[in-house]
Image (tube, rainbow, N blue to C red; front, side):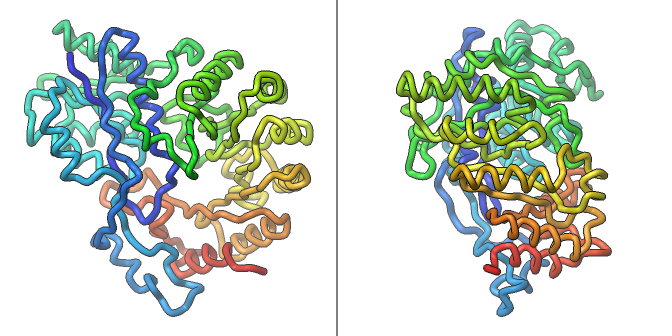
Length: 448
């Protein structure tokens, strides 16, 4: 059976360039290869970009684009297509002999890009199967079955489910036992509520050999993303991690992770390793064990690279000793999220540490020569302008670089999905107007 995995392009006002390695699809590819198949990856989220006209959905932003008042000026220049052109995507799909396509639909705001990929597939093949997975697909599986021509949605983790689905199609057997599968049978939507939760230490490494050379480049260096664990035991109200990983956390053995790092250094000439874990250091024991092993590889075996955790590091178990070990291991930067300085909102959002803990760790990291990036959410339900300005002042007084993330709501109605992105400043409230959001955002980048 011929299999193609597709990572759609992205259309937005900006993107984070490091997120061009689709780890989920690469893990699925690796399990398919282990199962005897030979999948192909079409990674449409490349480094290419082309400016687009502003979509009608964002017309509410026009008064703020190039506004003469810098305090309320929209901070992004253009709406842009990031990745392979639709013409090139169609050409490659037209030439594809695939019997089944697996398509990633990670973020709700990019649902249209996934929808368009499916339309292109159906334009050229009515017989090929289409399966969709990822956060948005897991959250809204019925949308793909009702509003697109997808055949299957895989909810949760996709490795075991994808392999079992391919085998069921190949054998002509019912897909009903496939974990997390949602599909239509005799006009009725059926759903297997049992989700796959594999032992993450037994999974083969992501099939990075399917990536092109361009996919490894970031900051003019060879860049690799990986995970050492799945899930998080915390219960922050705004976190979507549990949609895929479920509750709790599963971690890989340290030696298993070190083995993958060494492979990436040798095989892909990795110069930067980025850990995408939701919570990389949930305990001091785990942190010490892992960091000391990294230091050993760096100082004794000459395996040297920059280390980052751009998805953020949760601070509840971090202390001065861990910060010192991170620096020795190769972390030059610490990405940490306060979310808010308000103790009341911290409690209501389920945050696992206080502002004082945040301040202590930020200052410790700065003492050790690390660049500290402090994030917070701007526009949380219940937030006031005064609370936001208090959060910004708190972060600036610590001396960290301040990065706001504009609140968005993935549970909004379908007609609002496209606007639910941090770059859109969409969700006003009784306490915060769009102008308030823009003022606070721009204030983060003003020198005191």
